[in-house]
Length: 457
Image (cartoon, rainbow, N blue to C red; front, side):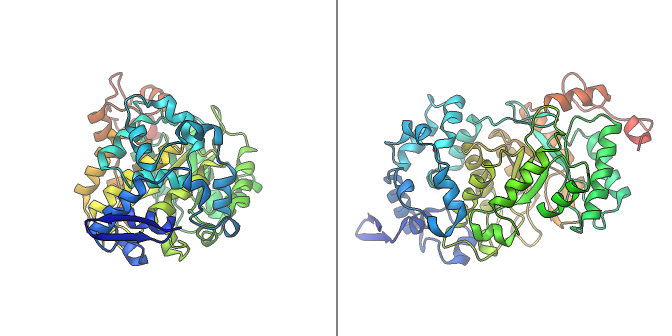
């Protein structure tokens, strides 16, 4: 059905819910490329006004991607918790924004609300929020997961240690790995993007990471970010798989472009859990997402890229992941043109993921052909820190020499931890102290040439 709003003497008409959401989205290059963006700032405001007055129940009656054609839509509708939705059932999208920002809406309230929210509701309300609103709401959310340590506690900030190498050379990876550990990185995961997605390479890297973890009794999890089918082969061959990784998207077509579907994700979950390698919990899935992936796969189904992104979070939460992160600026300026768009998207992704109950991290990053620089990443890191981001990346010099993009360094994690009084996960923090790398005040200590991590490698 069409939706309307009049600004002065101009009447704007939006043919369906999908169009209304797209026109209400803050400006970004990907939506303009797809031809779904508002054609003027005034049209965008008109769409936002119409969206603000829209009852939340509309999202249960009108699917933005047809139920019969898309398994992600079926997952969203079939898993919706009507009981959890009941306290907000009477609200409009604008009313939901007020509810989320209310001083009486606290962490427990938001936790109980999570299964009652659909990704389209969450995407819609985020389109009505300023950046400070996205920060305020996200900071109220606490999502805790466990494998060998505890991730997501308030007052904590974890890091993924990302020791990638352009040829998967074990010595180069080990050098970056030790460097990161000496800087206190790695409590979210020690995760390698392999240069080649081959099962024997994956097993070799998994064996290497697990041997280091066991040698130094590191209370953290390891992961080689190969395709899920490669990881399943590694499990079958007895490899030490802690986490199963997969990139995912918000439509069936996007996931097909990644070579997966919901059934395969369930198979990955069950196979990895069957190994029972977690000591504190069995959250074993690690997902990455990113605005623009649906359009780049030509599988966006007419959705704006942010709504498509948030639908990916419904896929993620169905499999109880340990970690989820948006690789916010990685896909390029065709989708997020400059620092302003990347910052906005990072805050949206983090807030929407947290509202849906995900342990949401962000790869605070950009490619060298985007109109962005490290100052923009410093800004996004700082605002995400205040929003309570679960984890960020730790990459030597903030420059990934295999994937060729710019992210955050080990030093960046130290900066934000000190600035906002954030600490690593408790088990990892205790290990850092036992290794003489951290004092009781959470300050990093220098490691001498004879330190165990240096001599033991």
